[in-house]
Image (tube, rainbow, N blue to C red; front, side, top):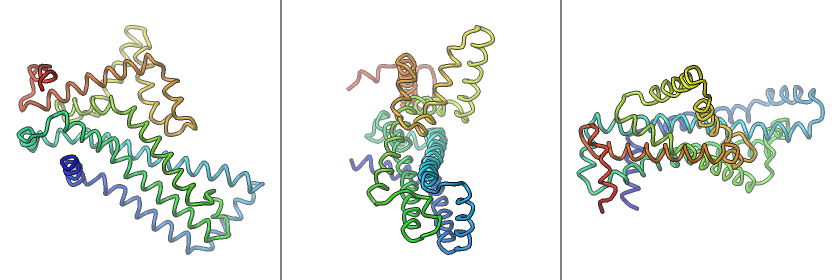
Amino acid sequence: MRPALFMLEKELIEHRTVTRVPLFILLCGVVLFISLMMNTNLQDNLFISVQTQGDITPFSTEFSNDLQMMLSFMAGILSLALTTTYLSKTLRKERKEGSSAFWRSMPVSSQYTHAIKLCFGLIVIPLIFSLLVLTANLFFWIISISSDTVLVLLHEHTSFLSIITNWLQFMGRMLLVSLVMLPIAGLVLAISQINNSPLIVLFLGGYALKLLSTWVLNWDGIAVFLTHIYQIPTTILLSKTPLMSFANAGIGFLSLYSIIGAIALFVSVSLYRTTEISWQSLNPNWIFRK
């Protein structure tokens, strides 16, 4: 456990953007929160504009649900953006700086290193952004119990327990997103050890495959497959029943997607085990060694 915590702390220190971006967003949220609490004229003007929409009670519930969904979606998208950016840089940075050779000399396997980096990108980063969602909900809750104007419409929570429940729901969604992103994460880690711009390679390569399969082969199977890959994370974030996203994707897609992810992780671990990248790096003998 201690080596894992040490390595996770190292990732936090080396990739400060992961903490600086959420802190900047939190600072902006605090400023907005203070301005809303102090600007009573803004509250009264907003109250008048909302009343013109008709019945306040159903509008309150609908608006609050939309606001909660918007907060969760924005936090989820930002988390995905930072995760993909981190995964595209972490192994490449170690190769450029030469620290990968140092870590290979330590009693830490390449598989363990990959597990730590995947854990940091797919679990720690979403956890950090979940704290933003929790903080935003707390702000709205404080506004709702401290103001008798329209700002109470911004939040439907009536108890602290409901805030915790929404936070846990967001974390559940993000864990599903992380599970879906695992094959892509392995692919990004593998390409990042070969190319300086793995995200561009993935984007252009996927787009080229999509065009070639549709125009040359007159087959839209690859296009449909790539569409599922692009859509399933956002579908999980926006759907009221996130698990249905897996059912809608189909067993065929999930099986092929998992196989691609397993191959990508094998390639990434194999490349990381060697200083010089070559075809000999992909020798699978390390799998059978104790």
